[in-house]
View (cartoon, rainbow, N blue to C red):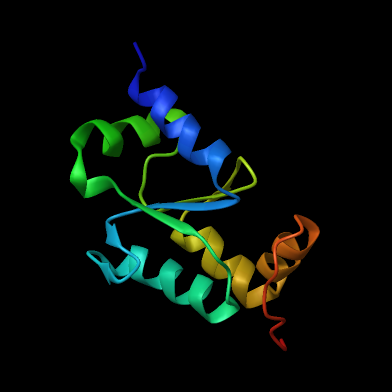
Length: 112
C-alpha cells in the first residue's frame, strides 16, 4: 500500500517544478505561499501547486519528506530548493532564474 511519502515522492518526481503550498496558485491561503507564487508567475515558470491544507497527512508528510519545518516548499527536478525566504533571496540575487535555466526550465531573465 502506498504511503503519504510515496505520494509526495510521486509529485516531486512526476513534475519538473512543484510547490507544496497553503492554498492553490490561483488562491494562496498564506502570505509566504503567495510570495512564492508571485515569483514563479513573474518568472513565467510552469509549476504544479499542491495544497497542503487539503490534508493534514500531506502537510505533515512533506515536512518529513524534506526535513524542512515550514510551508511553502519548492522542488525543481526532484530537488528541494527551499522555502519562502530562500526562494525570495535567490530571486532577488538572480540565482533562482539561473537555477531554472541550469535545470533546463524556461524562466524569464530578470535584470538585477
